[in-house]
Amino acid sequence: MATSLWKRTEPFVVPEPFERVSSIHRWLICARRRCPQCDKKPNTATVHMECFEMFRRAYPSRSAPDRLFRHAAWRQPSAHMPCLGLRETTHIHLSVVSVVAGKYGLPGLTKLPQEILQIIRNYSASAHFWRYVSGLDLAARLAETPEPDPEEEYLVVPLREVVRWERGTSNPEVSKEPLPVIRLTIDSRGIRRVESLTEEQARYRHERYDDRLFVVQGTSDAQLEGITALFQVSHQSFALPREAPCAAQP
Image 1 (spheres, rainbow, N blue to C red):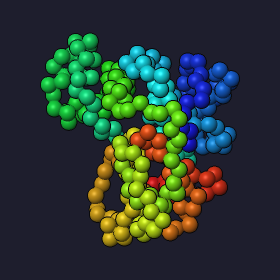
Image 2: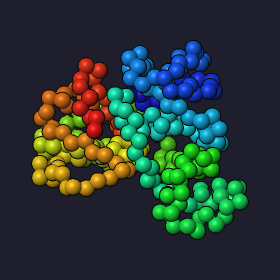
Image 3: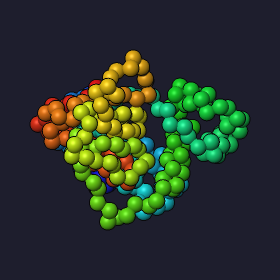
């Protein structure tokens, strides 16, 4: 899993599903599902050009491209996992909605409860209005967190040794002797939480969610062999060895 931005292409038109485009900035852009060649590609993230330019204006830091890349690419916890299609539930800054709503002539929008705003957003997520809001909101959130140290190295830990970690915190709590079960909570932004649990704590509670899913595995299982967790700047991802079965799929 990549930890920083290596190259940026020129703007291009996204291909239709199952089609190929010859070359964009010397890169072959592929939209096929389960493409064996794509398993060998570097980690990538696709961003609308207008969203990228708007984000850069709102967050003019030198680290902006790297932080945007990690935010976009690490939403998929592993290159081996399919698109999960989880519902977005992160509440956005009302101050950001207010700015965009004012430009669109919708000043009353911010008077609605957050829950109602979220419902409206879910039904019209691809609208330019919400793209604008999302870009400004991400810029505001990154501005609230410390600038990353360019010399900072990421932390790599065997996944089975992670005892506790939650998005927004720094380094994880680790142990060579964890509890018998590890549980990952994944939402639309990627890995949200990692917990080491007893078998009783990990027992299914007959609850259902459409905004998150859980991956539960015994810490001694052979399927966890070779799987590492990668931590950097309050984000997390994990890498699967290519020859290993995709144990983390739901």
